[in-house]
Amino acid sequence: MNRAHLPLILVPALALLALPLVGSLPSWATLTIAGLAMGMIIFVIASGLTLIFGLMDVLNFGHGAFISLGAYVAMAVMLPMAGSLETASFAATLAMLVPVTLAAMAVTGAIGLAFERVIIRPVYGQHLKQILITMGGMIVAEELIKAIWGPQQIPLNLPGSLKGSLLVGEAAIEKYRLLAVGIGLAVFLAMLWTLNRTKIGLLIRAGVQDREMVESLGYRIRTLFVGVFVAGSALAGLGGVLWGLYQQNITAAMGAQVNVLIFIVIIIGGLGSTAGCFVGALLVGLMANYTGFLAPKVALFSNILLMTAILLWRPQGLYPVANR
Amino acid sequence: MSDALLSLEGVETHIGRYHILHGVDFAVPKGELTMLLGRNGAGKTTTLRTIMGLWRASAGRVRFEGADIAALPTPAIAASGIAYVPENMGIFTDLTVAENMTLAARGAKRLADIDTARLEWIFGLFPALRKFWGSRAGVLSGGQKQMLAVARAIVEPRKLLLIDEPTKGLAPAIIGHMMDAFRELKRSGATILLVEQNFNFARALGDGVAVMDDGRIVHRGRMRELAEDEALQTRLLGLSLAAHQ
Ligand SMILES: Nc1ncnc2c1ncn2[C@@H]1O[C@H](COP(=O)(O)OP(=O)(O)OP(=O)(O)O)[C@@H](O)[C@H]1O
Ligand SMILES: [Mg+2]
Figure 1: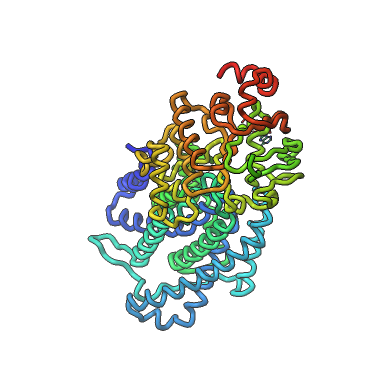
Figure 2: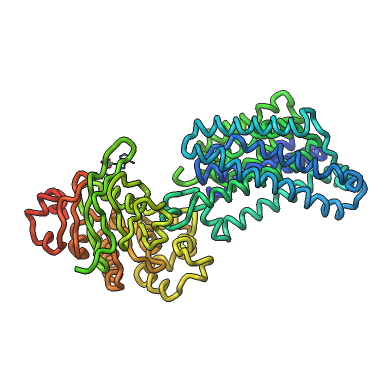
């Protein structure tokens, strides 16, 4: 077995392992789809973060702020459409959600650009300061959201056509979760295509391995990094929209809560690795749902246990990035 | 001797709290291969990195085509026409050989944009690259990686090549192959600043030579003269080096 493909097996392996524990096939199917949906959303959020670290060694603990922000922008844009969203057909719903999502991504991308300039740039190469100042940035963002939209939890209703489940055999599969899996897959494939088939993508992968050499070839890595930061922030915004709809409510603190999960994911995956981030996110999503069902008390720790187990097996994560 | 394409004047470099280069002066004439020799730790790599802007000169000037480039950022220095092969080769091991070459060709948006005649010329110098064209560069042997590193530097015409120890860790047969490639490069009119530990390699290829010790240039001249003067070699480079080659 190719060493590169081995970690991919972990996802079906975890799912199969859970089957006898869960016991009933329909419940297992429901949990598995829920886990995959959650995993895909986490991947959308974490994929930018892992490249931000890989490319410039920047630890951005403020990444979660873009999750909350994306969700709130979507909520604000959806508010006036609430009536039509409730009754629209599936196709019409998607047609309305596309501009909602693009608005959330545009705002988070633009704020990301400012965040990089004001908060990240002064602390290039200084990890401790990065951790402190980006956490500070996140707290400020959280307070600003509360100041604008209020401190209370706000319900984010699923559009009418996305509510409810499809019955596959005896298993109830929530429609929205299927949609989230589809969107996550689309983002993953688009990202793989960009990273493998475009010159910018090749430069990002090269830069993750050896920044100095990319600069010596005549490319400005800082410009590349700003681009990655903005794209990563916009993806976190997209993830925030997906996550808000998944939970069906949003709070200013939702970003901080997801932040823990995404750091677990990028550590499991190997810092800087997109494929590792994908596998890690699916594992974390599945693990959270299986343990939430089997043993709610350990659900909170299950992902930390997962991370520990994987790091014991591969201390650099599933896909260690060369030179790091 | 023709005009200097590159000249260093009183270049000093600090790395952190260490003062590494103490006023380096030498010139690289256009169209020549200039050897930069010196014992381990003399400051050869630091000199090349300072020219590339990867370390900042704290004093002195780095003139390239007359303009002082010492304060320019690395990408601008590269864009002005200088290619760099670092001591560790800087191969992107996750990328294929073809992708490594595509990135080195700044003018090429895609693989297909690389000048095919030039690519054929490079395949002529380093046939292994054609064979492994679609493979991940990580699977190449040390010698093949070194060839890829040099090939990247010449995938498009550059005014100056800075190459740090292209024979490091190579078997004698491969060193001979590398020597042939450098002869062909010289024939093509390239201007090269070459750091070497292998004195035979240096003797066979060098036009001019500068010898460093402890962050300073301690000798400048023609390679032929140094090659003929064993006493000078011993004094400048130490017995061990010249003797064991
Ligand atoms: N990153 C660094 N931090 C501190 N000191 C360094 C660093 N890099 C190099 N030096 C020091 O600078 C001096 C010159 O090193 P340099 O690598 O330029 O030598 P060199 O001539 O290339 O040697 P070699 O033939 O072994 O490659 C050495 O004393 C080395 O210890
Ligand atoms: Mg060296």
